[in-house]
Image (spheres, rainbow, N blue to C red):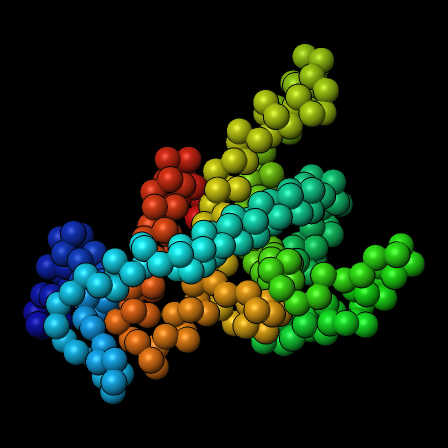
Length: 287
């Protein structure tokens, strides 16, 4: 018996060892590259910067975190960033629910795969192309102004509203897909039973549909919330003078790297807390 055959036989008899060897490479990559980079980020946040040369001084200090909690502008940027992420998530839910209900329950079965592909098609386009397209739409005299002009209104222009609208467009498919899947798997006899018991449409939605789809909504919100919280390119292009955490981190990388690292820990902590909250809804099992 060759060494290869003996090794194969040993692995066949030891499924746990086989699984460990199979997962060793990706887990090592996760530990070294991802978790390691987060550890370096957290450690560098305790360093300081020479005010004259802007060079990093590896002297331990909590000044960066003290400034993070005591400086009003940092608190405002943090609250604004979380608010934008929550607003984008809420808008995605409001838009995705009727869209997913149509694709999963109303449209003819032969059209449903095509509709899902159409919803996911924007993900195949370049991120920058989509953002700059929205910049043109929201610009002065652009498509938004042209469509709202007959009603005596104007487009939102560049600013916080433009950033929220653009981010909603970018991440909407990540909300539609899990809701569509949940609605497609919803047993039709539950809806029939609700109707037979005299429940109206809104009561059926509230008591039958929503409890079963809520974990999928929470799963989609993990993507929309985290992606919006960490985004800075969209705000840079359509946000006007609006500043979010990503923009402040980017602007401090060259001048004050430890302060940028301290700011970078904020979205990490917020997302971890958000994931822990979503875990209680069963959202992580729906991913």
